Image (cartoon, rainbow, N blue to C red; front, side, top):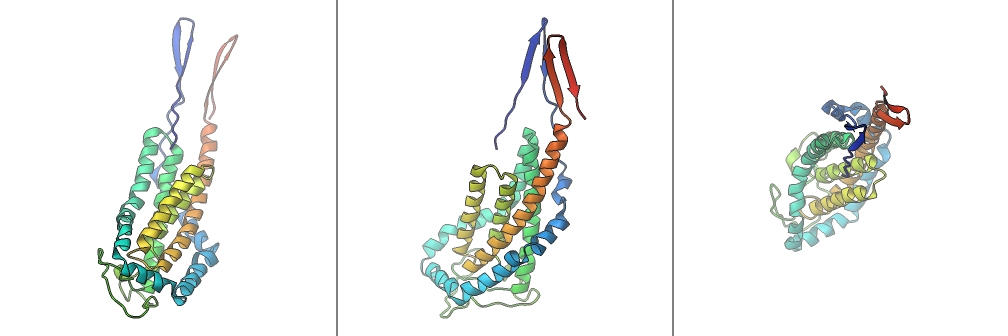
Length: 279
């Protein structure tokens, strides 16, 4: 993130006076739960068609058209290709937690309140994505794709299409064995859209955020998820990030107006120096 440290030195009448803007106070970590209930509600109430109906319908189409199965079998027959995505699986276990903490601490060290808010927004989007993912996985109980032996996933040679192997109910297959939707993808896209909403005027940041999310989705689809898992996770994650990002963007804008009203203004004139502090 771009940081600007600007120090003004004013010299006059045989003495030196330094005027610098007072350091900004830290953003409270309590802001991580800013309107969390409203954000959960609006994510699915305002976007129930795109955030729920479309992922379900899209998954049905991908399964019934056998796109899931053909993609799965290609990777099964080419394990060297499937293994290319393994690093993204590991990264996906770490980065969703490291990013909020890192953004907040770097913002704190540099006095960047917007970056601090971004870290807290990422924390909230992660909580919403993890909660949504856990509930859906526990209810749908979709079978693992069985492409390669990796972590708790086992390579299985199925002669027939098993992409429609679901165990609907309450945790019938067990959360660890369920696959729909992709939590890695949901968390990555939620984070990317959260950042895109907050830094809506910075195309470079948005491209970087979504490049990471795309790599995550592609990476996990190559080994631990069906392609439709990734499709569903991306759509749900997008609307989580959109809702959380807009909420925090409004908070940041409000915070900026408050801080600009508390400015130290120094002006010079032929009659002297005037200092005004607005609260």
